[in-house]
Image 1: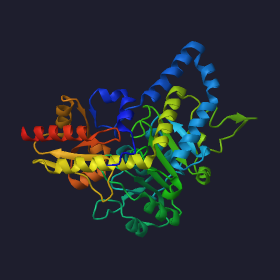
Image 2 (image 1 turned 180 degrees about the vertical axis):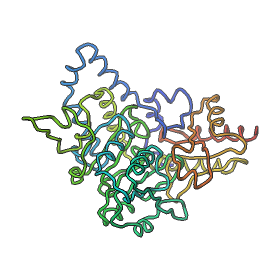
Image 3 (image 1 turned 90 degrees about the vertical axis):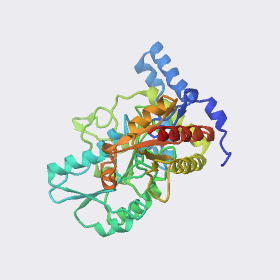
Image 4 (image 1 turned 60 degrees about the horizontal axis):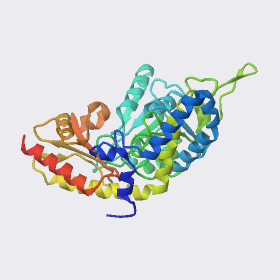
Length: 396
């Protein structure tokens, strides 16, 4: 395993590492002390000097966060908006698309996140539009060639969850982008599990919109998210609501901003955004490639360990794999596995059908246990988790 990262130093700077073995980074990871202190320091200043006054002084620092966020994903600052959650970000962009009409088609990946899918289904139902699933390849990943054969003049959107929530698959998002761009169809990427785990270059992906929460592998605070909107695509989007920041009235006329901040509200949390900025700077200083390589190595070891345990089935799909390791234990519900591990000081997740309804239904799964690996994890923690799962399986 690469020793590019000083993992022990990083763990010493992360208070949560002392609380137990954390394998729920795809739910929410552990922020560094620097990120936490950035938030706390701002809140103390806000309490002493007043919230509005402190925010005014922090203006340049907040714009630096926007620039850093853009650099992290290969975007310009004007293509980045800050939102309170990934769901809010995706929903705001989707609601800004031209209204659907009867017979319109939306093409989605089989692993589409349930929140996005619910939003699309509700809109399609109102309009009489159709949602169709892009076929998958033999390894379970999205089939870009099949997508190309589905394109026609009725397709209004292609939507893909890049790294699905229910397993280790990494879809070929760039291949989908090439198809969508050639057809002139808007392309949305849900990069919730990608941000901070794998390198992101929005130009190479060919997407028009990309969203991701800050709390996952990036290790930012909850209540923060990025929304990228390609500058040339902005004119095709009409926000569903405006305020004095995104669309002020000037001389009696509404002037909608000409950048991605047309999706931002004037009210936000500067403390959380500055904390997000600290997390972004840390990720960039480490190098996302080094983070990706360490996560891949640790996750591969965990999968091998789990596959060797009787009654345990690894449920991951794909040829290219992320740090999200999904599995089931025969005779025990994933939520019970999670609870049993929690009693041993090991945190994992457990996902049901609502998270990825199309894929779970296609594979006949109702729940999976989800152990998501970070560069902060160690081989001793991998062994601890593996041994604990083996003990739980023996007791069933």
